[in-house]
Image (cartoon, one colour):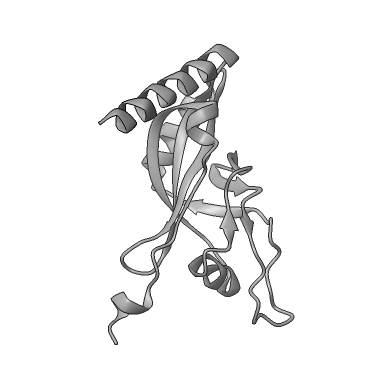
Length: 152
């Protein structure tokens, strides 16, 4: 059997992200994980719905990302909601840090996936929160699109 057959497609989305935020700029970051965490992610047992990113000592961390404990893990299992460091270049970190100083901008995870090399990656987006009327507009556009697809 080849590696492609063994690797399942893992794509964990933050469904609330596009509804609640305007996504301005997207980046793909690596994540520092423990051994049991990557095994849980490969099984698809993770959630990024409530997660957000923040800077601490010029490094970017993701907080509140849920990775279920590995079922076959021993006493060395990981903590499900621990902070995890994100891996970006210094240039990307400086760019994000500069943009974060603007009022109302935040960094949220949008997609958690396994790349071609078997590494977990997190797609993050610089985003601005939507007002209630913006959210209603998003729902209206989605309903119109769905109605057009049904009509075809």
